[in-house]
Length: 226
Image 1 (spheres, rainbow, N blue to C red):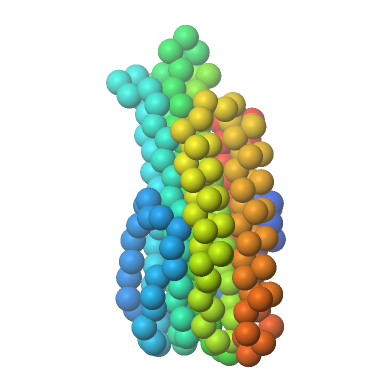
Image 2: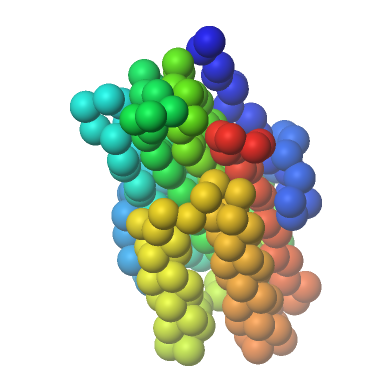
């Protein structure tokens, strides 16, 4: 029996699964990445910015295993409007319990925006689909971290090293053979570490940053046991 789950938007509350849209959509400078190291991008002053990160994996009887992840850092600087999209899709098709498949797609996106009245459209989606695939392991996870400050925040070397270490461990988990349920738990734990690192970064930022905010949008789908 074919089973398929439609992509869903995530909430701004950690570890829940509903829709999130903040502010207005803004057209501007576009960027797309699927496997970029954790490093802060130098952002020029601009009025609008758009970024999209998407990880996709697909397995079938010809290719039994595929695991991909992305960990991107997008620092917009001061903008009037910004749009950030993060998406993970994993598909397993046509395998059997005796010849099972494994498909994993994980996308971590960190976005920093600055400004007193910035309009932000944050979209975070994931979809894990089993198509006539008995006993298959399929996991898609999208984690979007939004840091909002009054003036631009630049991650220092220590913060970048911590994020790079989490990225390396995410790579290791993605390539592992852990059951889907355990993999979900460990990826969630990494997301918690990212949130802690970001909160430390804004806590040590200059006081002129005003009242900073760190928000996690989480969307996680998996077969079996989602």
